[in-house]
Length: 361
Image 1 (cartoon, rainbow, N blue to C red):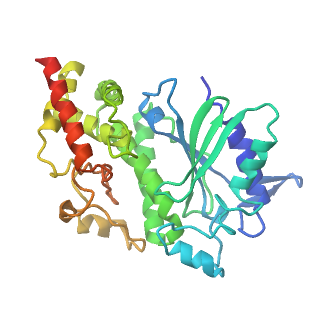
Image 2 (cartoon, rainbow, N blue to C red):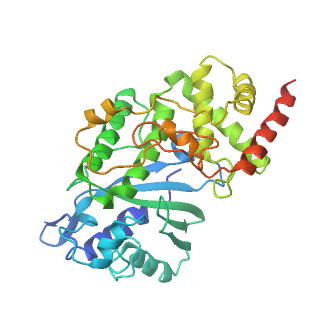
């Protein structure tokens, strides 16, 4: 079944790009002396759709990768922008923010115009969640909830040949893995703080991509998907599936499921499901849960001269707040996916795991 966001691809995004071309140096060329063509963007389907475990109630997580010229001006004179860029928000001020801003040529205003002019009622929801680690548009189009993220990268063009959503060929998987590494590293080396959110978005996608396609052999991927489905269903039934309220999340559970599959590559689904409860109820928290070794100083030196520094998770962080259950993403910058879990949440999660062990006795 094709995804119902082709309107967002071709109409809304391209309209926004064309309207904003003057002030922000969009990658535009004249085509047949009549049409303006946007020099590239790529679309990534992330979340449960990446793993292939989506249900009828799942939302779509979509990341649009676009060239830096679309959002990053050659020079910044606005003092409010300079202040916002150096703050935790790492973005332009509302007047100049071309994604969530209130200027007539921002993506939000373009989407809003489509929303209010939608006589066919295809759009039923348009919300912005801007001041967060991963800013996004929360949209309902044709009855399907979507989280739309925009990630400018440190390139002047985005190739039309990129296809991050086709991963049924091992050569293409390796190519995509190398490409996503390269795009993240280029932004780290570039050093512009306006790339901060893009790096967070793409490292989150990369972590999930590696769990599904890099760390596991092809023969192990189906059972990983089924294990993740099972433990997500369990967490929802036990009402402990909510990152916002300090419980488990899809990201946390995918790392946990991946760890079980790596530990027992030949295990059956029931065996792995049982081991999930045994291992993580008895885990020596705050001992970190790692799928790959943490990045070392030598690893970072191989990337090149990194100008954009992140607080990548380190062993010493065990003593700091938010590290009761460290569940760490892979590759620099490593992040603790379970930083929202507090003492109460930890106790409830482990209690529910212990109760579930009894099912297998």
